[in-house]
Length: 334
Image 1 (cartoon, rainbow, N blue to C red):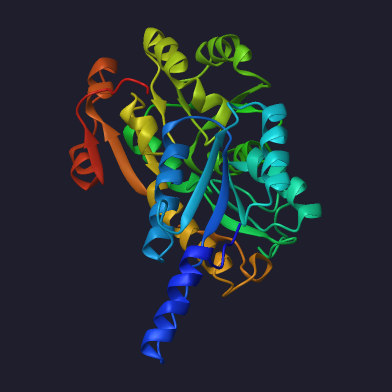
Image 2 (image 1 turned 135 degrees about the horizontal axis):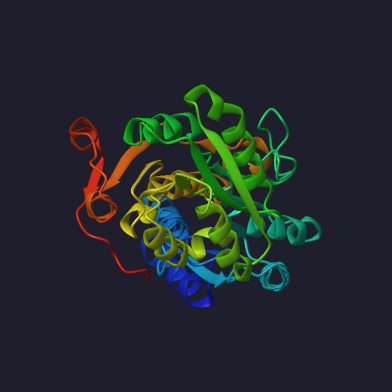
């Protein structure tokens, strides 16, 4: 909650005024925000890191004039609701949703409480009913989209796997963003002579069977920014490696873990952009409803040469030389 002053600061201010006659001292405004992250994995962690950096760059820093209540929902919708309701009852100054399910849950809880919501890592805010078709907020909620660069991803896969015919995509059927991304892949795949095979899941328990089904009929797989799927990426990669099937990621953290390559976004930068939007709302410069959601337009190529070597794939030299970052080893999942 915003705190204008304390008795100690007020007393000091009055004493200063009495001694100097012309000097007025004001306490620095304090803010409390609630951050709900839908699941724990690299890209969402990077969003949170970047978000706090963006706030700091705007003069709002944890431990100085900012109190942060951070909660992770562990990819559970029931937990999402509990966290959202707690933030609303605590009357925080701002709720922050990292990933679509958290953004939706927070907005529902914030409506009656009159608390603004900022989101990040929401692929399609319109499909998630957080913005209208023109990108304008549906209420006191706004943020940033991590819309996938699908066209660039398909171009990259075709260049790296010139003989491939089919791409497998696993997605959570309850995530509006994932369904939207699958439709875009299906619409564009024919332009690159690919066929898209999909497998829908509802929980992480469905992943082994869905992965096995896809791996039996595709030449490669590509990930979305699907939180449930990405949370089980080590399992998927282990199964794909045993089958000799390359898996492409959607952002840098997935490539670190062993995906072959990705045309992806910088999630720290996405978070930083979101933090700057949040600062405007906290400072009262803008209402959330006055800020259309924003996106990062440029994607970057990330490549893992260790994954390529394990699969016996030779990455064209022009791709590695032009990549934003090349990883020569496979990292352990945190």
